[in-house]
Length: 87
Image (cartoon, rainbow, N blue to C red; front, side):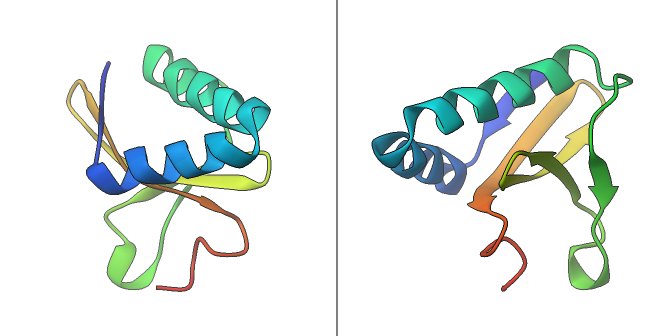
């Protein structure tokens, strides 16, 4: 599966990497692992409400908001768990 990042997600990953390179690397590794094998054991949930079209991937204290269509994984946002659902 191909991975595409939104501009927002790229900025958020860079910001995370500034403060915590280990977490940023772990997030990227988790995204790549999911893209390689979506049927694996990942903590994935469908979001509710107006964001019901998106999925959430939990990686430690971070949440990756994404959508996967056909063979493309579109990563929209990467946020700390405390900030992830306040939009």
